[in-house]
Image 1 (cartoon, one colour):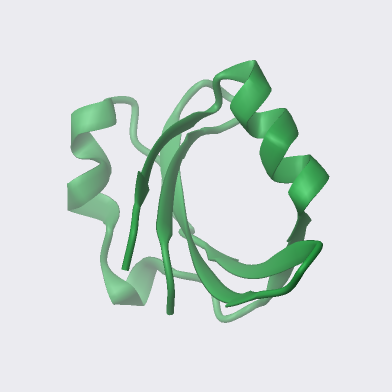
Image 2: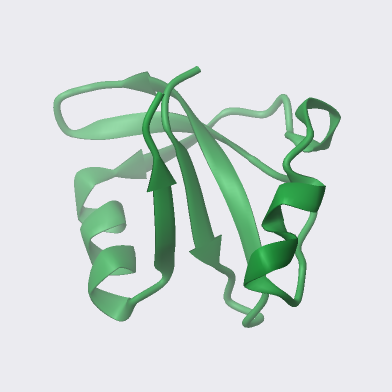
Amino acid sequence: MFDKYTFKTETGYFSTFKVVEVFQDSMYINYNNYETDRRTGVDDIDLKKNYSYEIYVLTNKDILSMHNRGDIEDIERK
């Protein structure tokens, strides 16, 4: 896996997703199945067993939109 993103969910909570593969115009990711109401609580839910095995696609446009809305809280580079 590559980078880990901490983001604000649509419900106003915090969660993470991990990048599985990167392409020129998109990335494959695994979402964390859990959310927390505290930004500082993200480390508590960042466990391998909490990540979905299902692969999702985010385009570069999706990531830029999340960034512009202020939904991306942190990116941990691997």
